[in-house]
Length: 541
Image (cartoon, rainbow, N blue to C red; front, top):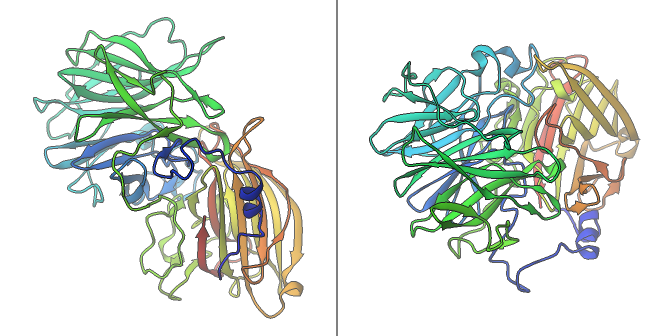
């Protein structure tokens, strides 16, 4: 089952077009920015003891609100999720609309008196948008719901030294919470600053810290107009209620892409500081950069000596084991790895790691029209600058009308699809694009185009196993990122045949799914439920 890279697309890519290295030759110890070249938006990061904990937005993916951990700010792993499912609406099950681009957003992570706390407000209207507060004894969980309350947009939870608790949200709005976090204290609403006329765009993404007795509110400024750029600003005060003064603490383009923005800062045990700020990078999504922080005149200035995101940063600690939030998997465990997330809530009785040990079995549980409504599509992030992933699928037990395979999944999807038609099996490389209603996020239209197909019944009449592979290239190009995907299949896992579109263009669209492209394994029924596939391995490089 080994995948030979030497003659494949990615092997040629690395051989012919090496990614520029900015450190000294042979020096692989430094953090190459982006720190995480994958879709990890809306970060909040804290340090507890010698460990950094990071939480990010994953919206409609379940389990949700991933908690990642690192000792050195270079090697990250997913250690838990704040919740397994959201159940406020059938939309989370794709039954009455969807939650594409909504769901869990911009979680705030805090540690106070021996407990972890997380506050998140789904980007929804009505009761679906009510704020959740969770707590846990360990970052890995289990997390328990403490309370639900009114919606707070892009908010920051903050525990002050006198044990009073606040939520800062929107554009400079604040309320105090009861000490047991059960609800707000009515009458405590306050607008803590009025933004200047120059802040003519969105001002959001609140993150609050306290340092040397002063309060710092970090926000992204989406300034619009000629010569204006996205930037990170900071509001500072001696009293949490104000008055506040403002300073621009980072305004930097980076790596051939747009200006960075939105994030926070975190200290080390020795008192040094780092800034973790995301950057939009097209099809791969919103990636994380790490920069040193210099305190100048009481302001946390993020970036190098020129105020820019550096190409490399020295890790906080050396000699840490290599870890990743994206992982290969042979499905030998009886428990699903934390590197996987389902598209919307999974149907629990329609997947298994134990019915056929060593395989992930995906069963069809309802009849749907397309991949965007398919339950139990399982995903991992794609990663820059270049990546490749393959899956080995046994399609013996598919039923007539079933569609299964491997995709670069987003609102615009490129997919390798195994289709059963009667007694015959076909492999198709196709492209599809989904349109959504504004309110319900219901799938209103799907445009599908088959680019190239082969008859598996003739190609492999005896075996019903196939390897599928997708290579991704997210390096800078003429239009931002190349955002190119290429598709392959193999009957032995060593010799690969290219199929379909060359350099399929992956896209990021905040108006639809609002996420970076994901590797996705899927299986859905178009005629009758009950079929299944067995996935033998997922191999990622």
